[in-house]
Image (cartoon, rainbow, N blue to C red; front, side):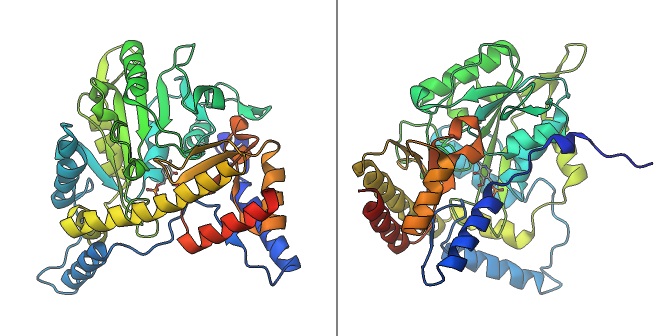
Length: 407
Ligand code: PLP
């Protein structure tokens, strides 16, 4: 008899985006004339940079001729991309990462979800609340948690992110082994200073722990004093794996390309307490279960680092940041407490009551879709997330409507 992995039965159905879609569909059915403005999901809306498109086309043309055709590439990514990454994303900021520590992949979602399988099931994991749900769900699937009770999985150390700590969680009071951090944060839009991040690095060094640092939104950081990479913190290479993505900076959400940095110094321990580097484990996992990102996509990603590509990425992210700025200012002017929107494309708003009630009110009265914070964890209750990924005209229109309802 075939039995299932019962950990999957512990998973809470992720109703968030389907619930939103259902409520929007029902509203549209009742109000067919009303044009709904969607500031809910974190998907980008603007086209790929022209530099990427040109590189993409050129690579497809190469694939069209026997002489330049490419089959399977290196699982870890082509050198041209790995080298461009280290020069531009790390060496340019004084960080010493080598090209062979870069693992190119088809998404930070897969990488942040897959990395946990390198570690044993009885480790203690620390996960922020509210949170990008992938970190939590993949650990549930792997059997690292107990049942779901009262809004939380048993056995997980939740790192509360609240207004009191500016949505940057405090160090855990108990020992943990694997720590997930995401800055700039989805969903709260909060950022972390170098001093605060250093506390986490020092904690991990002192506790034989590892930090999984999701920097998918680093391209939105405008304040130069904030870290764009955890490796800007001394000692982080021993205790941190970093995840990056081309999804939000260059609009690759549908094109798919990302990378993970696994420094060779990073270690974990075997059951006899011997130090083991995790680099060969991740390399082995990657090569066994993944066959590389397509050549044209990697060429398109490498074009992000050309002079034209850098200019276009800056324009794209500036465009979204202008939206975020507008949202933040307009909502704050209405007397609501906001977080994010400064070095992040997300604005996190205290709705002064239930997340879903606020969501329904914005939808019914303003025809604007946001994301209820409660869908990201217990500490998200009471908040909503507004995403800057839309046209300026739509964001402006949404703000005018919200003003009419809330003023
Ligand atoms: N990490 C965070 C925090 C995200 O919000 C997202 C997407 O919304 C991802 C990772 C996924 O990135 P990718 O498109 O590279 O899979």
